[in-house]
Length: 356
Image (cartoon, rainbow, N blue to C red; front, side):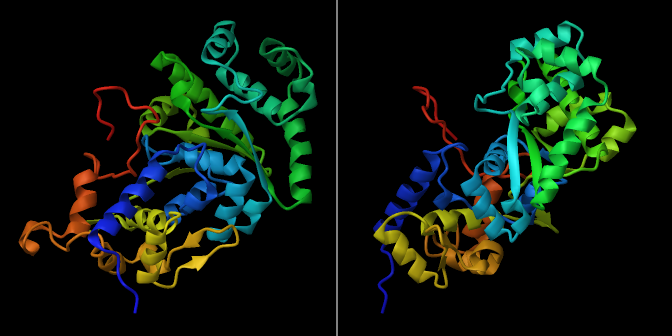
C-alpha cells in the first residue's frame, strides 16, 4: 500500500514545485510547466479572436509566446484538441522581447509626429514582420510608410499572397501585438498607438483571409483606445476576456487556479511529485514527458477540494464556521473585481520589497 506524503514532504513539494514555477517568466516557461486551462483560455488561441483583454498577471504574454513558439503551440494544439493550431504560424509585430522588426517608442512617436497615421505605421510594421519583400528591402520605417502611401491597396495584395500560402496548408498566419504598455511612456501617446493597432486589426479582419491580427491588451487601455474607432471597426473586433476565475451564482469558480496548482505539483521533478501523482491517480504521461492531471483535478470542484485536503486541513479553524480552506484561499487572493491571478514573483526582487 502506498505511503502518503508526510506533512514535511508535502511542504517540500509545495515549496520546490511552486518555487521552480515562480522562477520562470512567460519567455522561459518550459513545456513541462504549461497548463492548458479551461475554455476561456482555449478561446485565446482561436484564429478569429482578434483581441485578448486581461489585467496584468493573467497570462497575456504567456499565450502570445505560445503562438510564436512551435513547441508550446504543439502542446496547446494537443491539449485543447485544436489540430489546426499545429498548422498555424505567428510573427510578432510588437512584444516584450526585441524582434527583428521591432520598432521602439521613440521611433513610433517620431513617425506619428511626422504625419503618419498610427494605423499606417502598424501596417508597415506588420507587413515587414510578415516578410513582405516590398517592405523588407527598404532601409527604414519612414521609407516603408512612404511606399505604402504611394501604393494604395498594398495591404490587400500582400495579404492575398500570404492567404494563398496559408490555405495551401489549411492553416493560419497570425500577427501578434503584445505588451502594449511599452508602446510609449506617455499614456496619451500609448493610447493613440493602441488605437492604430486596433484599426489595423479591423482593416485586416475586413479582408476575410487566413491572415489575422491578435492584440493582447489591458482592459483599461482597451477602453481608452476604443472610442477613436468607428462603430463598424468596433463591431469587427472579436474580443475575449482572459480570466482564471468566473462567477457561478453566489460563488466564484476557481477550478482553473487549483488545476494549475495540481499541475505544478504533479510535474515537479522529484520523488514527492511522483508520490503525489500516485495519491491522485489516473495521471497520464504525454509524449513530451509532461504529466496531465485527471480531468476531475482540472475542472471538478469537489474532486479538487478532496485533493486539496492532502495539502491543508479542510477548515480554516476548528470547524466549518471558520471557513472552508478550498473556498477561502481564492477569495482571499482576489481583487476588487473578484479576479485572482496566479502569483508572480519578479525575477530580481528589490531589497526591502516583498513580492506578492
